[in-house]
Image 1 (spheres, rainbow, N blue to C red):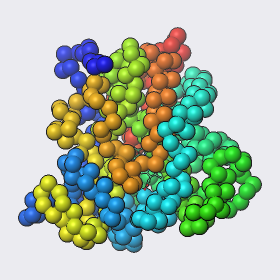
Image 2 (image 1 turned 135 degrees about the vertical axis):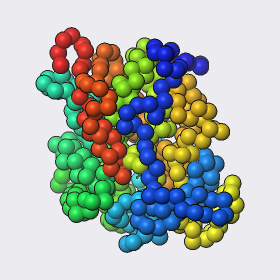
Image 3 (image 1 turned 180 degrees about the horizontal axis):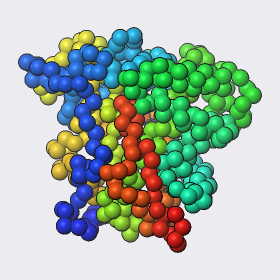
Image 4 (image 1 turned 45 degrees about the vertical axis):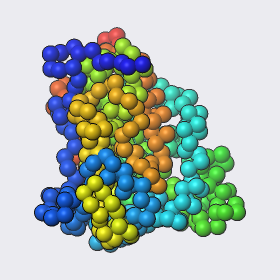
Amino acid sequence: MTRTLTPTTTAGPHPRVTDIPHLDTPAPYVREVPSTDGHLRVELPSGHTAVCLTSYEDAKSLLLDRTASRESCNVDGGPSFMPTNWAPEVLINLDAPVHGVVREFVSHEFSARAMRDLEPTILELTGQALDDLERSDDPDLVRDVFRLVPAQVVCRLLGISTDHARTMNELGRRIQLARRDEVDLIVEAWQELYGWVQRLVAEDTDHDDSGLLAVYKRRATEPGFEAVDSTLIDGTVMGIVLGGDNNVATMLSKTLYAALADRRLYEAVVADPGLIPDLVEEILRLMPLGTPGSFPRELTRPLTTSSGVLPTGEIVYPHINAANRDPSVFPEPLEIRLDRPRGRHLQYGYGMHRCMGSALAQIELTTVIGAVVARYPHLALRGAPANVPWDFGTGLRRPAALPVTLGNGGEA
Ligand code: HEM
């Protein structure tokens, strides 16, 4: 069924991402570099020059190339948007064939079907967080709900106490903000969080017998997974902790902020909650988690693009945020339209490194936003959108707080 968003102002039928204060994302690179072969080249914050693929088809071609190497980029002094490397054993930094073995080892529990079973847990945790929000004198959706519930869901998944959620979230936030002037802070937070993850994997004391920690430890002893040692399990769990928590918090915050900053969006989902997946989809299409939406790769064989052939050894960046605004795929790309066909954006990546947690992210985004919309049809920002404070990090860019009035009977 085609649904249209009814305009409530004279500004045009659809909100535009560029009209909402702070929301749009600047280019993640330092500058464009002169180039003679028809490809766009850019300078990365690490100082390296990379080819930047901006069309939908070119970005997909690179993401589909199973030989393009992440491993060779994630080295000291390697091409990167981030100010530091991440552990080589984290899934996004592994190349084939080890990547395939670890992916098979880990991803069964993240299927769409498995994630649908989580819905009651997400609803329960969201309900508790909203109860607490209502008791607060200054309700803040980011602090009280969006930075808490996804972290608690990760704890439940791993089989550990939800008491760890706040600390896990704050350490992950510091790492993913990835500000170049805060390298010491990133390293310190990484060591604390990864040290904790390594202890969880090494010891049997702090987790139950049914969560992912127990499942992965058992599976590592099964035939076919001899290559998965404790270091690879550490890296896998770290990927779940980093991605499962703050990535979802970031997209929850940006989605609700966009809807409240242009109330036509909020009113549309209140009137028809069936549009919530469309709202989630559109904000995802337009918003990477930080400034870059993906990681650079090094070509280990030539890659054919719409502008020619790139040679082995070239550093290439799939610019997902530009690809998601390719007008040949998304007409009027800057418009937030709730009537676009679903399932085409590349914000979860594509190919071998496609986001392992996308089904988890989807069920959390739609369930948490659905619970908020159902409970607070008159929810509003407490103040002008331009005054909402933001975290402007490289890996994490989102409202730092969402002070709201709940509008459900006079309280807060
Ligand atoms: C809305 C939230 C999320 C977004 C937008 C997102 C986005 C992405 C993207 C774009 C990639 C691929 C990067 C590249 O190819 O350069 C990726 C990979 C990954 N994501 Fe997510 N992610 C989200 C949530 C999650 C969650 C909830 C988890 C928890 C399990 C997670 C875990 C991972 C892992 C482990 C990888 C690496 C996969 C691999 O290399 O095979 N992400 N994500």
